Length: 256
Length: 255
Image (cartoon, rainbow over all chains, first blue to last red; front, side):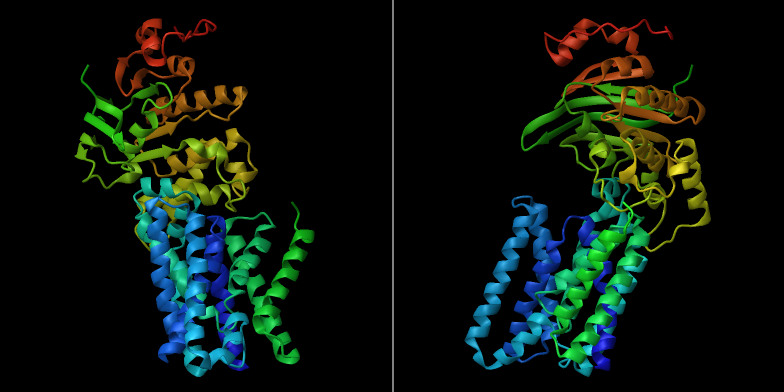
């Protein structure tokens, strides 16, 4: 339980930090896509008997680069690229899982999150990677903001926008992969996006909105984990329901 | 009179999109202190030319020299302030304050991981002051009118303390009353701040009244010189086709 809380807080901070940049780029679906890719990564990990968190990170980073490459080639719409990766990786995951029937019992926890399955190794990996993602966002804040606000202006100012975009996608892939233990494949997209949208209702600047979204996310994670613990609920579901309640409150309390 | 220092030199530049030529064999020079208007029909290569100058597109042929250096060796990107075209369509929901947007103008002067310093913030405050948007410092950009947002993007360009300001169709989506104020503002930047200005417009009258020199572009150079001498029916016909007529306007008081 303590481990789940520590991991949950790390994820609760990192998910909206990355989610903010995805939302303002109209790229909300990216989180869901990477989550499904992570799921295929988990399946690969279970099949090869390696820690699924590592295979999930590896596969989603590779997929992230692939998505960015296809998007830049301009032969396919950005959204269509996401659709291909989302359903494609789910297909691969299902095939792997049906090939190896033994571990289906574990599956539910990866889909919807579970607090009882967080091991000490998981906790160390989650906190280390979350710290790296957090520091990256802090130190590259001005570059990430500028590129998200106007890519062409950023490029005209001499910023290496392709490199920044690849960094962004790698950070997103890592953030998603470390979140699936607690929040689950099907709900991590919600934790990355909903607190951000709630914070945006208050019509404030980027920095303020970013900080507010982290607060909303942390409240969702902490209350969600308590509910999950005391009522034995899937943690991902409980967390996202709290996030949605916060969103509804933000709709009614924000002065717009 | 000696010629001023050349800031932007375009030498025999051509550019094609997928084998469709957009700019053909273009040569001209922009010198310090100039106020140049670029006119021409849609699809005539105006925006493409700007993107070539900014390094966003590579010319198919020819050379671009910026401040005496080949564009590949030119690293002081902050010396060119760019105000893009689609400001009025910019995402109204993007959560960024005026201050946050204007501050991006300083990024070209900073390294990776480098934080904004006091001098950066002072330059941002000054740029907002000159552009008359200091009072909107903490307002979301999306909540401003078209004309106000235009000024935010100019302040953003000015914050880098550039030597050249390039504006692409700056008055699109700005109402007529605000346009006049806006042109006066540009003139004062050229006159008082000694800023070299290049501005693209399809509005021939605005260019002829406001700028000191004009360049007409329709794939290649149709004319380059003083607006009074150039903007006659013959030139306009070559630019916009036979049936274009210039609508007469009030006599220009400056003449």
